[in-house]
Length: 438
Image (cartoon, rainbow, N blue to C red; front, side, top):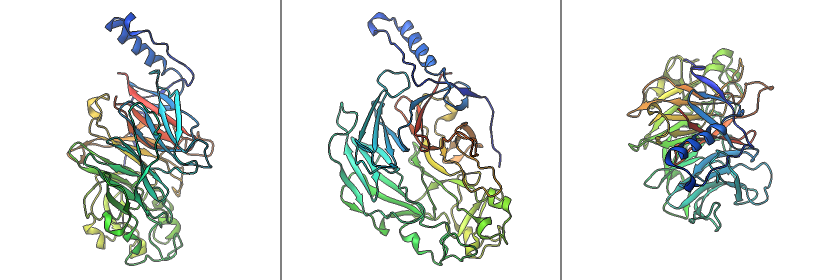
């Protein structure tokens, strides 16, 4: 599997403190207005934002030191809403509404709302509502015209969501019809009788699949729904933190592959195999689809699903029951941790990006032989629901992969109404805004 780096990459420099003075519209001709806007945007991209992008792209630090921003949503007026996982109670609320009122690529209005000790991962805008995951429920705020942050009390859309085990984040996405697809990450690494223990066999059948390790579907047009096993839409996905849709209505999701093949099964796997396997994957979601966890994992080198050691696997040769599990659309290096996904439906980026997928990788902690990798945003070209070429690293330089590296870890993505791409970092609390300059 190839890692595409350094092609047309350059360091983008931006300034947090540079402000751009705009002339009054009445004093500008259309030609000079275009030139002034171009000069303003160019000036806002002159200082160091610490990341690299393909030639022609420009980044600004939209906001900094804002907590632990997870997923993002952008309103029709350009307001960026942030589900901000709290580390301690936050006066004014743990959720954020960010507004760039000057047009210089930096949020100059920051308003907090929501519970002081709340916060989570999932957030989405549907119709005139802002949907947020808070603990064991998804709530909805009314977005009134003219308001930046919601002012009214929220209503509960879904309650009783399990908060158990290894993966407690509850990302979700809402399609144009109001179908709300919720990720229920697995409670364990590989459904062992003794979680993450050496040579502990898998529970068979894996009962946690009834409430975890899959996608659940709800209706964003209704309130008062209660989580239950009956709402499961797809299964066998260990942790599908990124979910999005293309213009044809296809649903895509990322998956965090399992950990500790070498650490738990050293008789079957080398340290290098534990570093490389299993691959992280992008899948097309199908109702009733089974993607294999915990019985199977995707071997990125052999490019097929193979039997997990907890269920009789022999180190990557046996396939067994995995023969009928759904394959991925694309695969990526092991343990990179895909934390969000956005299909680019904007028109501001060059044609080759339209309809493809941006994926935010949070970066690894468990590549057995090291060094740790990931910490980037990649672009995956897609056509008719299939990968139409190899992925490329779109944004890089967030972290070096060692203790001395800059501690930025991509977590969330959003596309604004103007086609700009936003990237959040839940380690140092930064949000970037990326535009194409040509």
